Image (tube, rainbow, N blue to C red; front, side):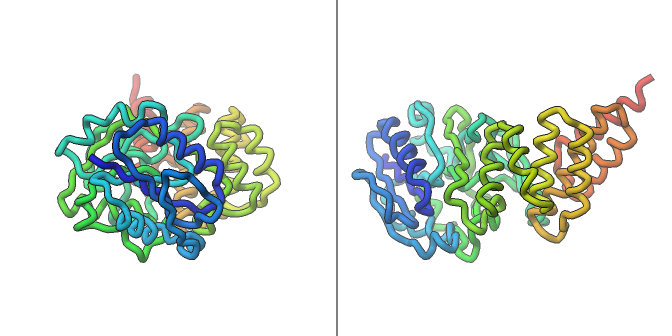
Amino acid sequence: MKTSFVIISGGARVESMERLFRSIEKQSLPDAEIIVIGNVKDLYYDSATFINESELAGTAAICQMRNIGVEQSSGSVVVLLDDDIELADGWYGSIKDKLNNASWDIAGCRVTGPSGGRWYDWSWASREDPLCPPRMLEYGETSENLYISGCMMIIRRHVFDKVRFNENLFNHQRDDVDFCHRAIDSGFTFECWPEAVAVHHLDPVGRSASDPAFGAAAFANAIYLFRKNEYGKALEILSGQGSEAKVLYHAALCLKELDRPDEAVEEFIATLNVADRQNAAERRLYYSSMYHLGDLKERSGEPEEAKRYYDEALSGFPEHNEAALGLLRVARAGSAP
């Protein structure tokens, strides 16, 4: 069975690509090919095929690049990858027997950020409300709203005979959500293999204007530090980045993680005051801020305030499990003798 690794690259993450190439090589797959598509002028690896589509990379036309890469591949299994992914040692060894099984069409593995937290590897996204924030599913949990992040998705080649990526969608326009939902509707079977691990390094270099974290280089670096759990360093940078909703929200998260609850409450409320709920990214920040305010109020022994914020979070994000659980805790505590 031949495996094709199709890697999408913007061209700016040369060191990340070298790391990814090394991690694939370490897997010692018996029959594999590597195809890199995008801005490839500064990239080199003697075992890879490079397809230059710098204009598509420049406009974040990720769906079109994926489709071209798949067309040029020859494996019965296609592994889609972003250029800041790294396969952990033993990734292939842990799933090689499953790859030959006929029980699956599309699969995901455990994908973590650089600090070890999960990265949308097995997730839920609303079909009715594209502005509703996604959430993680427990491994093995099923849903018609399931999706796997396009940063790391394993797909049998025959799927592409029926479902391709929608080339009208660009990076961060629910491209992977759309593909997975249409694949579910077409009857394809999804599996999750958390024993296989990949790391999404989320490098700030190489972000495009379609990326929600795009902006000043300083802000991108702050997000990178935040995702590595370096909250103090991230907060120091964010403090000088103005009063946009995304800046205030991430500063509030840092303050919460640094156990500075009063300051965190102030920053989350400031986020509510500036966030535009008609904007998809800022809508997520708005209702997520409501959840965090509920959590902080619950921790500080203010159940009525906590209930109010949890209710508001669920009004805009009804599938927010943590808000629902918080509301349940507050209700149980209020009814206890």
